[in-house]
Amino acid sequence: MKKRVIIIGGGAAGSMAALTAAQNGADVLLLEQNEIIGRKILSTGNGRCNFTNRFQDPSCYRSDNSGFAWKSIGKFSEPETTSFFKNLGIYPKDKNGYLYPWSEQASAVREALESALKLAKIRIHTGVRVFGIIPKKNGFQISFSKDGKKGMISGEAVILAAGSKAAAKLGSDGSGYDLAKMLGHKLVPVVPALVQLRCREKLYRQVAGVRTHGKVTVFIDGTETASDIGELQLTDYGISGIPVFQISRYAARGLYEKKEVFAELDFMPDFGDVEFLQMLKERKIRLDGLAMEQYFNGLFHKKLAGALLKRIGISGTMPVHDLSEENLERLCRICKHFRTYIDKTNPFEQAQICAGGVDTSEIDPDTMESKLAKGLYFAGEILDVDGICGGYNLQWAWTSGYLAGKGAANA
Image (cartoon, rainbow, N blue to C red; front, side, top):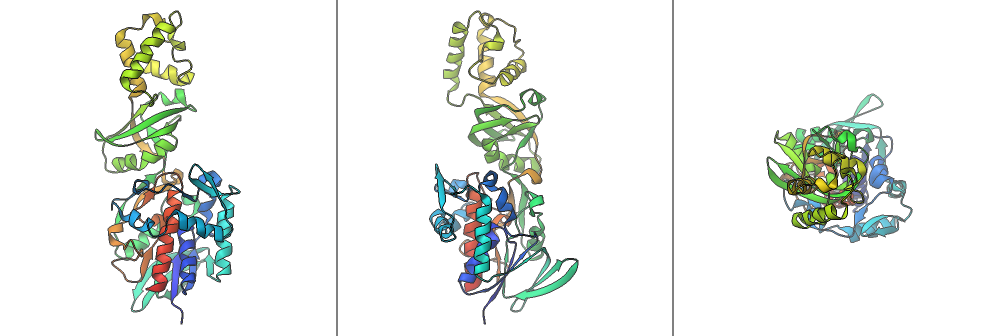
């Protein structure tokens, strides 16, 4: 008689877990609370689905349990992921190491997974909400509801792949955390990640819509914590863009812990302070005869230039000729070390993922099995693992789903 594996959550990690468990001889039942599996996949990569990345490094995966994710990634990484999807008919398009389906349609990935699940004869029940998991002598009893009716089902192993709290409208409502806690697992505080940051200063209304190359560095209680370089997006409430997303988990954690959080924006990251100050001095000579409102022409967007000048009290009508040595030094500091205080992140609904989740010190990195409850496995965003932008969160889903599926079927 086949071993029954019940998977809670039919997203990227749950689908991979289901396919892997079935390939390893298990009788698989997949329970999904949305009406379709893989709904969140449709929004990844701006609808194009960056499903993995050729560059893999421990720094691409974050967790309070340092090194946990990397131990797992080594067992099923980008080459295995690429091969897996080629077998499903998804040929990769390589954009500087970022891999997309050739059609650049996220729907292709979701449909390929759904077709594979059906071919494997995996039973899929959608519109199902699980509200209880009770350990029994030879497995688990699952309590669920569907269409207002309650039911129960039993299995020898359970894989909890119910997602996080990010983007609840796509089905990630955090309900899996409650199930994990019922089974004795601790949670690392869950905060939004890969998310925009809301800033205290009023000047952002002046610069809303500006995109500019820059570096963002986040400080927690005065200590430099993380930084990234790329295209910054200035909004009417604060800062956005991929570099901001990359460091947002640290800002979110600092805010959760009631610490002072500020960022420094460097609008000329390709220049050192001394080098940039010399450039400003040369511009004073070259642009003699113009007004300050034209001083940054060709360097910064007009709205950003105006906001920077206003921040340090220099009028746009002041002649460039009148710039003092002190003025030039202040201009250098404001362009290279623009300090902005972070009051909050945007909410979970606008976050791509979460930082925090089930404490991975209680999980076996080789199999994703709980160290507290034999036969219980975890996969995907529910765990305290979050990746940087670039396909790493999906790679974590494929890796953890594969290991959980294999572990659950073979244990």
